Image (cartoon, rainbow, N blue to C red; front, side):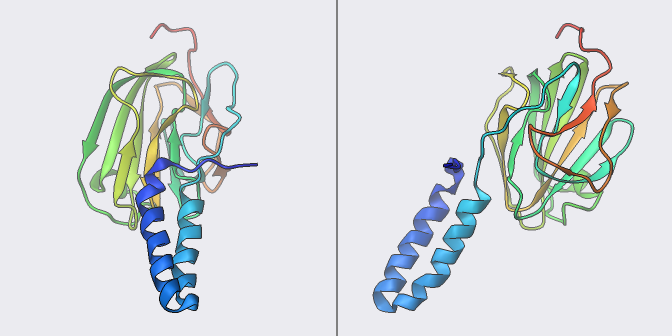
Length: 204
């Protein structure tokens, strides 16, 4: 089955292919390094289709990775270099605000990364209340690419953007929500149900 590749890979693919051609024309074995890097880039930027979890009040994971924080309202997910880095909407919602904040690039698994690192914050209005999704850059990640805009309406599991090379996603839930994952658990964007909303009948 063909796995789609995010378009943000294009400049990396072009440079590595050119390097492979130039080096290979000089000494064929030198093409091995850029080709190996090309394979990694294609793997990193993969954007597979997902079967989105459904059910009353279900909140789906906004990212692939490992859960590193769970409290009454906040769930944080750490993405390593080998996870899919396309972020997804946790619920059907309307984007209230989308804000980019410049910052540092400390290791994303540290709690202080949420406050000090470069990040893009999306406030979502949906059934059950307002929630916040924060795409956080990490030690290697240096750019967050947001594919959505203020006022846009989203389906649960719809793509939000991509964080390039290692990162973190924080999800702040509406008051009264109930997390259904634990620290250390592996989750998959769009497929894993990670919480339930307090009220799925509220207008939005």
